[in-house]
Image 1: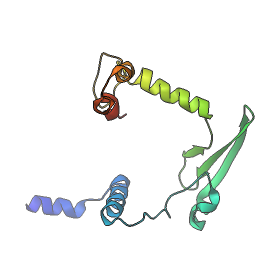
Image 2: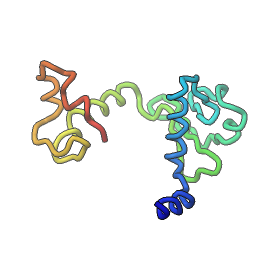
Image 3: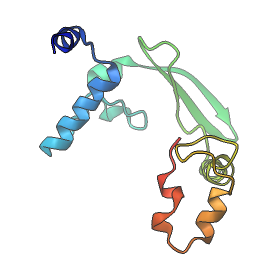
Image 4: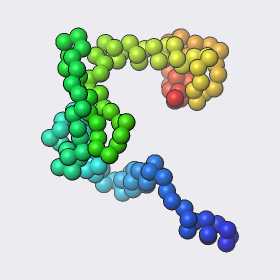
Amino acid sequence: FLYFFFMAEEYIPTPFRLQERKYRFYKKNKNPPDYTDVIDFSNMDKNSLSNRNLIVLSNTIHVDGREINIYSIKGKDGFYFISSALSIEEQADWAFRCLSEYASHPNYSNIGLIENNLWIDYLNSTNKKDSLMNKLRW
């Protein structure tokens, strides 16, 4: 018991645990969430003044007639947000590939190594609610 007491005094929560506590607070209290700490790259006017001051437009490139903005955040070296990096068709293609190719053996997931093709099994199943596809996480 004393050992736990001393460990509890020295405990420093990780950034993940701090965010988890915020999430549980909002979930428990049923209050509307506070978005002041959230950065919205799609609509800069929705951000708080302090968040707008953190956002830096690092670069703008043109690909296939699309303008792609690359943002960074002051004080977060190495973080870049690329808006509209993939077209809708490219997003659909990657989503399909993730489910049809990467969810199967030899790739790892939370449901273990399965020899069958998970996507084909899902398409052929009659009860889609109980399918392993609904439990898949990376």
